[in-house]
Image 1 (cartoon, rainbow, N blue to C red):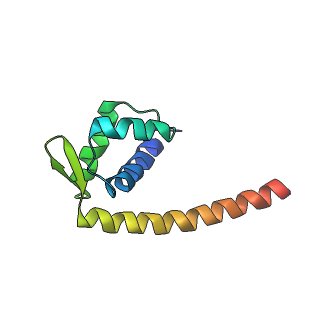
Image 2: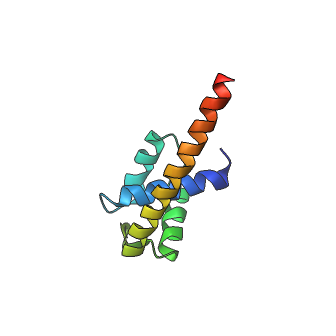
Image 3: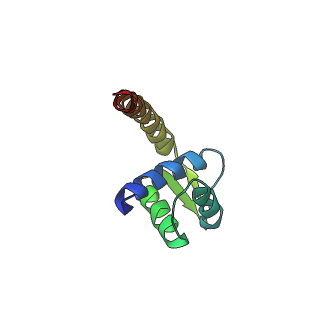
Length: 98
């Protein structure tokens, strides 16, 4: 997966993970690796800082927590992902049966 695309998915996953707990780089790394991402601590910190600049997360020392804006953004993301996945999976089924 292209790095730019992976970074987008990593940010989405970080927002998802932040719903349940405050995040640290060291906690997020194994969770992302379990999901198949090839990332290091530096990349995770960059993405957490990016989400903080967008006001989706707020930093507390070495931890990040979800903001109200982040909650709303994640709701919008999941709605769009739902529509996109339905379309792509439907297209995939049509292609595979042809």
